[in-house]
Image (cartoon, rainbow, N blue to C red):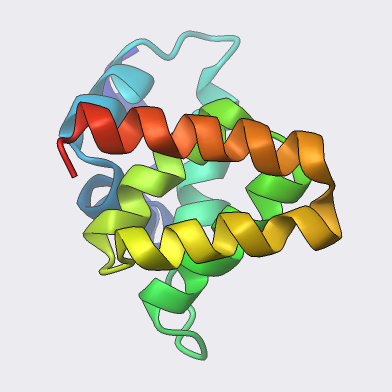
Length: 131
């Protein structure tokens, strides 16, 4: 499904801009271009509501919003999304040390399995990025 098949309302436009900025075209383009009749509604909603509504609010700076998002993903034990948002957090100015501290701190509230799995995901990504 082509990008022109999505409704380009204002929330979608804002969401697409920030989604591309934090996740990169290498992730966003295939997600949208490969959307079909089954997955397109989800891509539309993610772009509008997650990126266009939540990420564009002004109370939290983007770095803080990244740390909050990482915390949620650690707690939910969602490694695929965690890796994606770790990459975005680094683009938002979150340091390797801050990521490590968040992961260490997470064991007390999310449990050891989630903390250890999340540490593994972060270590692999940092190695991949040579950080």
